[in-house]
Image 1 (spheres, rainbow, N blue to C red):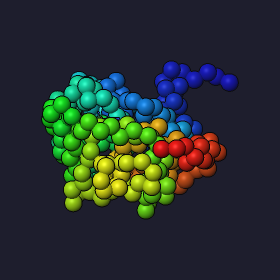
Image 2 (image 1 turned 90 degrees about the vertical axis):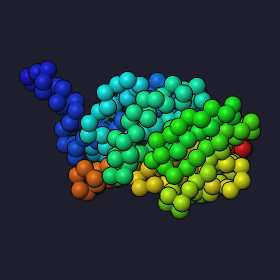
Image 3 (image 1 turned 90 degrees about the horizontal axis):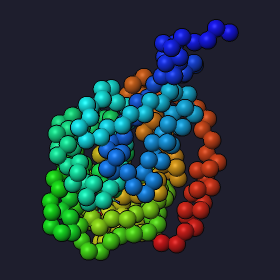
Image 4 (image 1 turned 45 degrees about the vertical axis):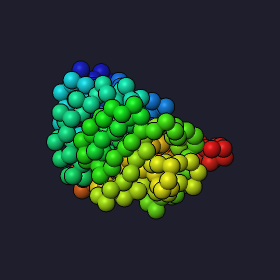
Length: 257
Ligand code: GLN
């Protein structure tokens, strides 16, 4: 067999044989916003995109980078208040591009710290106001009460969502978003209304780390299906292997708060 030339090899890498097409996943600020295993969300998307018969392309965007074109799914993780301060100016400089993508229906998964900063602002517990980009109609106030532990959320769209929270921010939803679900165990958005996360267009925003997608493949498949439908007009699922996800869900569901 003739070995592939360099050009053939790289095009085979970006579009595998028999692939239904490429899905480009962008992770926002992995250097500063990526805690409690949030990177695992990207790994799950990469694997499930393959299982569904598409070719994943994983891109990273950090402070100061050029913003990539033609992104199909955007993923953002959590971070300490200090990480949020590091990215705030750069994120604000991307406000109109990200708003346009969100309003156009780009599927996005936003966890904790970036969930907060896709909202209107996060006022930290020391009183510093970190402005957000206002894609989501939410605002967040830090308090001295840290919300930590395992969480189970009942979601009308995704069933039981399992994960782990660790935040000082208390988030209130405005009328422009709906909650992702209600908490059956744990706290979620704030200590009083029993709601967790937010939904807007094709954005899923949540406080849950763990990471979220390995234990909640229904959310991963929602992001992939939406991306494929927007890009290719339809989505034909493959046959993902959910064995490990089911085991992880069983273990997570048994954990105490
Ligand atoms: N720094 C934010 C808070 O404490 C976000 C934390 C996180 O992303 N886990 O509320």
